[in-house]
Amino acid sequence: MTLESQTQTKCPDCGKSKLYKDGIRYLDDGSTVQRFLCCGCGFRFSDPSKARANKECLTITHHRLGDSCRSSKKLDPATIEQKVTGTSPETQQELKGKILEYAWRMKKNGLSPYTIKNRTYRLSRLVELGADLTNVESVETLLATEEWKTSIKKDLVSAYTAFTKAFNIHWNPIKVRYEAKMQYIPTLEECTMLISGCGKRTSAYLQAMLETGARRGEVSKLNWTDIDEKNKKISINHPLKGGNARTIKVSERLIAMLKTLPHKHGDYIFNPRPEALGSTFYRTRNKLAAKLQNPNLKKIHFHTFRHLKGTTSYYEYKNLYMVKEILGHKCVSNTDRYIHYASQAFSEKDGKFVHAHAKTLEEEDALIDQGFQFVRYSEEHKVAIYRKPK
Image 1 (cartoon, helix red, strand yellow):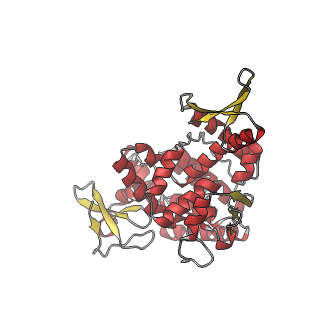
Image 2: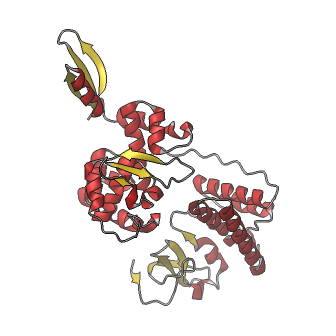
Image 3: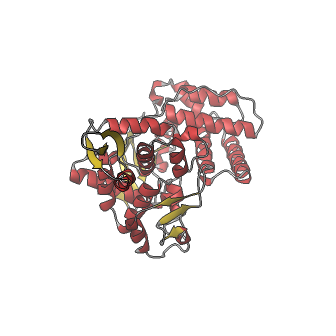
């Protein structure tokens, strides 16, 4: 895959000209058209100068990385033509205006920028594929004929449901059976290995996520005034998803890592845009996975650190409400999943434990602070036996 740096072709989604050549597409008449991949937003598209002459090519190639593979070839030509020409350019402009109006309504209702961005993107995808958002039958036909991943279809249905409620369009949402996949819970050693292999700013960012259990956007909005150096605490004052603000005890190492960072973003410690460190992190992660021959590192993403914090906290305290406070959940039902995560993560340790003994109350307190759990009291040796997983 060759970097297309000198081309005048630009991404139709974000307008950037930094593109990768991403193979060729064979058209029905035997000719070929160059495909491109945008380095900025991950949008994959065909050469507009040639692709416009073939509507079928436009239908099955314009999608973003991570979207489900379209199987439009299985549809008959009449269905493909109907999907491409289902809405006129004038109608599409009206629908885009509706989406902008809906985005402004969401903004006035106080929805987060993340929610607004995701919903408008999904609604725009429906319009691009030929759906008329004001015609329920048109949207249902598109959802039935396209082969989406279950998770993507669920998000599309959710976005369109919110749209119909905003404009008082009667629609009985399609039922999508979706079961969330089990999250991969890495070991602390794997996370430490990954953090050590990143640059100074990325390492501090990941370490903050690991110790606080905060979401990616919450760490991005940390201010210098949120650090309590004396008491070694960090306050999460910009919670997301309607969560609670909280203060978390952190290590001296994290405080030292944050203090060495330059003040490049004003009051913010990191770039306030959550996606800023994304490409750097994933590129470094993949290189480390190949270098250390550890494919499990590729399973780690930003939210994995939050799952690890919730899982280890529940295993340590066995108190669901304490984990709820650490993660900033409004409802304890959101925290309940970490019971299952903990049982899965620590059952994989094959019953290997570290044992410790305590003779005095002070020794017991010290072991509890280190995450040890009481097992039994030995009358013969007059000691309390504790253990924790390796």
